[in-house]
Length: 158
Image 1 (cartoon, rainbow, N blue to C red):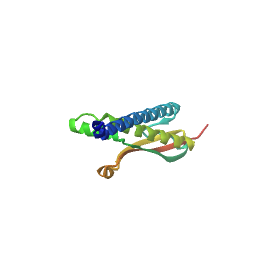
Image 2 (tube, rainbow, N blue to C red):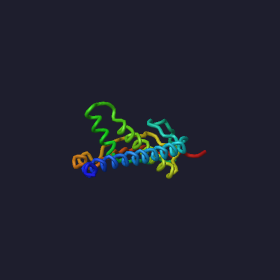
Image 3 (cartoon, rainbow, N blue to C red):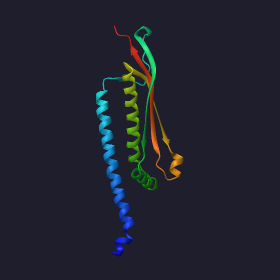
């Protein structure tokens, strides 16, 4: 009985670590499923990183659209990253974090453009940044932000 009491903190830590891992994995899978469904719905909406040659008579309106997403780094991914820093190699946990943030930001940009009646988005640009680096020193969780911005174009209908 005494050994159980002595190891209670370790057992509690391992249980909480397992719960965090499974809950985080479930949330990530759900987010990826949502992203995939929304990307499929918006598949025909043109978004490009170049500025096409459009004649002025063909363009009715141009306006800036943007979408941003901030995805938090959970403690389990942070623990994996610390271990990766010790041994070296790719940090796959962070790669999925940045991928989700980037794809979510682009989807939000498209949703804003569609809501305002745009036919396409040109000059799409992506920026990413780490938020909370100073917060990480205080043992708080940081985040990854992705922002997508571009020019939405509404074409004249013949």
